[in-house]
Image 1 (cartoon, rainbow, N blue to C red):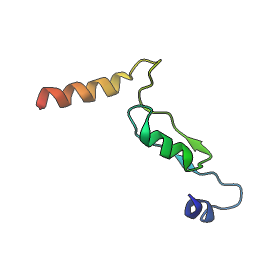
Image 2: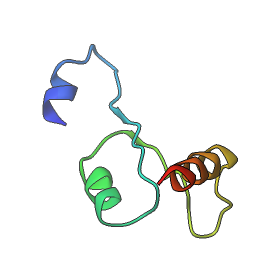
Image 3: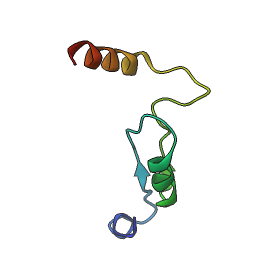
Image 4: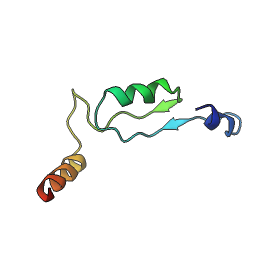
Length: 64
């Protein structure tokens, strides 16, 4: 994170756009890295899974 901050122009922010499926171990690392903004996982326990994610998982399992 320090390298990202060092390369910023004054007033810039560090944003982490992760592609994690759910909260857990790796999301903890992402949060601890200290970015100014860190996206939410694609699916959260209290929410509904995005239809695009359901489509990808369905296609994957139909091929496997």
